[in-house]
Image 1 (cartoon, helix red, strand yellow):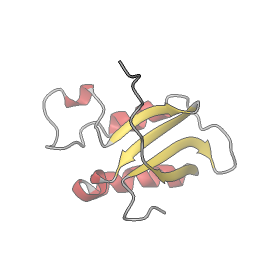
Image 2 (cartoon, one colour):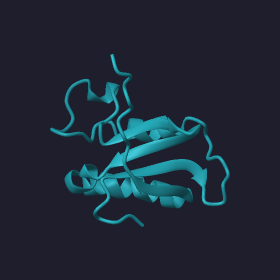
Image 3 (cartoon, helix red, strand yellow):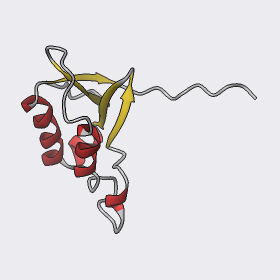
Length: 106
């Protein structure tokens, strides 16, 4: 499903046949479940923020969860959980990387 060389995987809120995945807060829920999986492990209060390895975002108007490949190396069962979620719900998965936003010259 995903090559071992990908640095980031985008799980899009679209099924393979193009339907919008529901519920509308699925990305936030998935990222919330994954919040304790982070560099250095869970710490007190870490459930109050998303893990840098699993971040919900909106890309071109589509709810997306960006999953970093480091999750695969450090927490293989968590990686499998996220990938199985995408597969079980027939979601579109794409290998890509986020580019930093351009900042206007001062």
